[in-house]
Length: 337
Image (cartoon, rainbow, N blue to C red; front, side, top):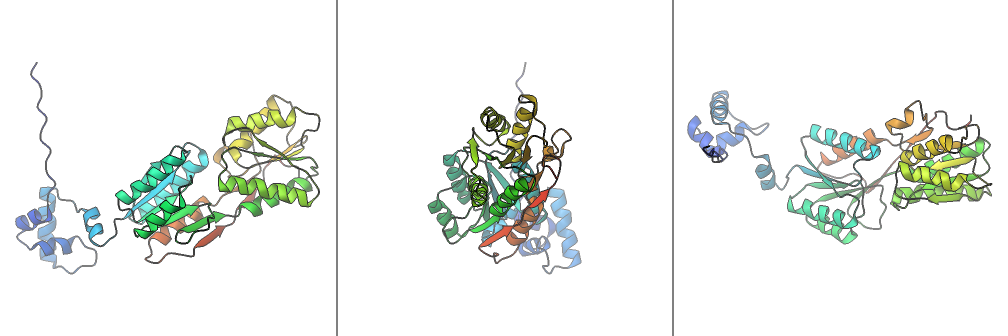
């Protein structure tokens, strides 16, 4: 059998070649494909016809680099499989693409070394901006990105460093409200289901809840059974509910933890929610509204944050160094009225 020969790769068509076929100057081709530039209708028609014939496409990356603007925005994300992270990436990429940005999503797989490597990659690609959705890059590397003219946006971080922009949600206020909601429901033995992830947002929620309960004279049982996920929530239920002094009010720092906690509570311990125990989550992922869970939780303003990032990066000047977004209670049926 005769071996098939691969066709050689065709070189991309240059603007000079389009100018030659159209019988116009190289600058006329550039003006034709530049919004707002002055070019006569006759010249424009010639250039567009030649471009169509040759299969020419503007090299926006090269054009952007000439003006020191690549149009590339990098999203650094860990745990992309989780519902909250997936929802944020979907919203952010859609809004940034609406603004004409080229979005690169770098999956760090939750390893600190991978976050650092991803941030270095953004410098290699001359990204205009990097949004660190999750993970903890070294502050020295963040400073390097800023010194190279890149805008860096950190989500739910509050480091003592000048240069990046910090977008945060009101974790502390929400956790304090969760404590009040459980106490108002008549709960007197409180617990918080957290994780070993140790991210700033998770730590802030856990710490604020414990502090709010302590100010009311209540000691809080804290469970960190593993990573931030369903299985850890179920294991926390086993740890907290097996003893004689089991809690009657639980705040889970994410919805995924809450879903695992709810299933183990109902199936393994045969407890009724909210009659025997009240449970509050955080994030308002889609599964929280499923009839099997009907979880009372706090909704993060994903759309509002994505809109803010897109609008901010569309401007030459950045916004305030720190911006806080409120979260809202979503009342369902896992807390007694």
